[in-house]
Image (cartoon, rainbow, N blue to C red; front, side, top):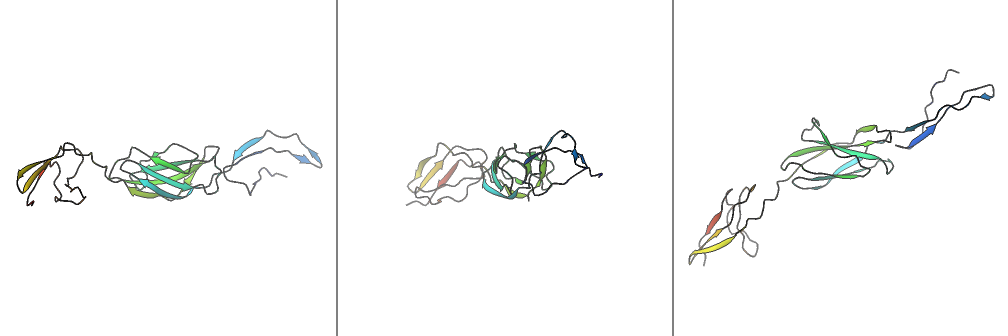
Length: 193
């Protein structure tokens, strides 16, 4: 008497359960109530890890942690370790995602959450962080050499954007110049024999 709730246990995560209730008294039972469909909570994902990294892309993966294959996951990411402000990946029933259009040379913090069938989110898995590398500068064009004397060659090329310097290599791959400064467009190699 006066029982108005019941806690059902030993259920699976993010799974729909449909139930209804009846009342009874001394062997007589009422007609069934309306039914209710409810999803159990999803489990928090686990094992979030970096898969690959480029100047504007980070690929992450994580484990389902017992959630069924139709469980949606979402990555929150930010340049601040307190995740304010945050951006979010699209929801997907996948255990990996690519975060794209990121800034180079920037530290990003990321964490993953799951969503159950009633669109309720879990908390986040442990956060991971990484710094995106610098973008690969464009290839200099117009590279050519012009003899200046019997013992020197002036090497020249067109300037490219976003470089921090230049190096001239021999055909066997060894560096023959020192690190040349940003916006250099030539180098005079001397002491040739």
